[in-house]
Image (cartoon, rainbow, N blue to C red):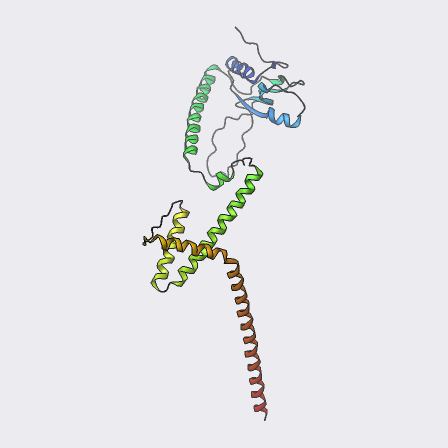
Length: 292
């Protein structure tokens, strides 16, 4: 059954139907089209949100032009020889746009004249090359997809993921729990700092190195288990009780520490002022003796 030629006013109710007719046109007239100047249906609906459209159209505007259309623009500085281009400025083109009711694609303009020679032999060669390019392109895309899936995720990939909707109450509770965890962890690290600094000589550096190893393991996502050299359970329980009492008294200890620190700073300031006064008096006495 012969396929009707595409002319101005020809309508298509779906993009698949248009694609079949374009392929038939290519076979009949020995031309290979390239799709350009397209506008998707989703972009069109953003401009006309109230208009009902046929979702099978996929596009609201498009142009099918001869593969030899357009003009080649060189940005070379003359260092290398120019490669031969397929762009010959061929005017052949079929332009379509969506109908007023939004249900069909309509041919608005058609120019079926070439500015170059057209024959079946060249058409078959170009068609075969396009098939090979498509196959190799699919292989490349498949390889890229495989490489992307196997590639480890980075921090940027994780941050770019869309946020999931979270219950505000759960989010608030999560923040509260995190704050409590940070407080408990802070208290333990404060205690570790105190105990480590009490050691002297080689023992201090050994304790510091142990803390560094623990921090490094946690950063790598590894768990660290510490086995006590003492099997005395009573000593361990007493140690835990001592830690609990230290947390309860932390506010009082912090206040005392701040007060003592302020007094120490004030005493240093007064002492410094007294030293400066004594130095000034000595300088004045020296000058008086020199005059007499």
